[in-house]
Image (tube, rainbow, N blue to C red; front, top):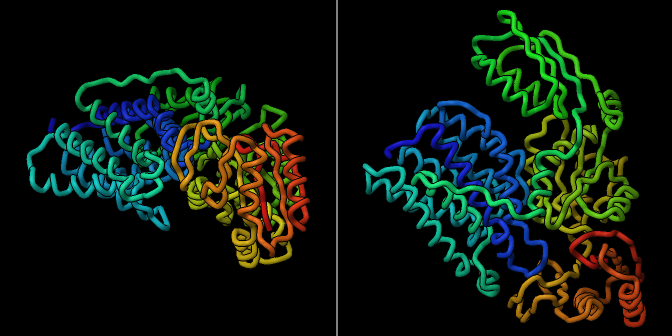
Length: 536
């Protein structure tokens, strides 16, 4: 096959998404630290699912339209660093395919080159031995391969690209010592290889069905699709069709609208189109409809009482500042709300919020300037991507990587100061607090010089494992000893949902006996980590 059309490309992407879906738990397990928050595979899978949602009902004979729609879906659904980088990879591919009905080997090679360049630009400090290295190695090798083989098929091109991807992935431990010590390859790179395996399988005529087996995956899928029951907005509009815009196809429009809501009525009279629909996302409906013409009249009415507050806030004038933080646990949410946070994006370890999640939060805060506290290094890129997409406010991402950094940043916020001063003061919080986190090992490992057995209690401080023990209290105390120095004056203990009072009391007693330091205990109810410690 010398080239592929839009339908071929669509089937390839679906096959790739299914292959990643079937293997994403294995990708999760490749986390360097043997802790239960390895979520690279889950993030990449949910990101791909968001892209698939955009193209599943898209009917076109233009391959570039498939690429563009898929890229847009990935952009809005991107979760975690791996998901954001993946969205940028396909964004680069879509840019190179612009206006091409079909895709041949030369264009495919150019798309990988564009993917590499776009992905690298999206990361401030690219690290080799990651998914970035894999896409770079594939691009560079493919460029040379095409130059030397001018008459190759798509199958041959993808077969070569896949082999180069596997070679690059297997080489990642040589580039990152942490991977070598843990005995794993890079998780993001592995996810990309599974995607490429799916692309190649499809072009060979093989089908990879999705294997539904995990209730956890179903729950995650629900999070993307939206779990609210009913349709909250009665949306009606009259549109004047414009022949200079997208060609109107009644069956396609009805089919697309049926995926956005129910109670659909569509009436056309020459160039006038009237539509009625009950939907949770009226903005999506209007954006879709505007591809075909201009609105003459529109009306949106709230049908669910719980949305009254949102509607009312939109009607009010914007306030100057809004604060958004990411966190999990009822106690954690209350802690942040007590220090001026307007809205909590639920997430953190094991479930990173998407670009779309942040955009919805921006809308609800309704402020001129919004400060975002990701509180996790794996969420910063998605927050920044959302900030770049959102145009209705000035969004400032404070690159907090831990909960304690986010808490301190909020405490330093001053509503009387200007944006620049607040940004500088809040950003400085990252250097003013030390963070420690205690959890279980989920597998045997050798990391940071420790021999770790599944079930051990691990203390992680500043991205390094600093304690390993058979008891929570022992591991916590060893970690705290490594964190506290003579200049520190305060230890805050954020107690997780799976911690118990007896262990907490023992840790507090240990600190009181050994150190002359203030101690605060906060019931945060966070998952994954029994304790999060902040040392100032």
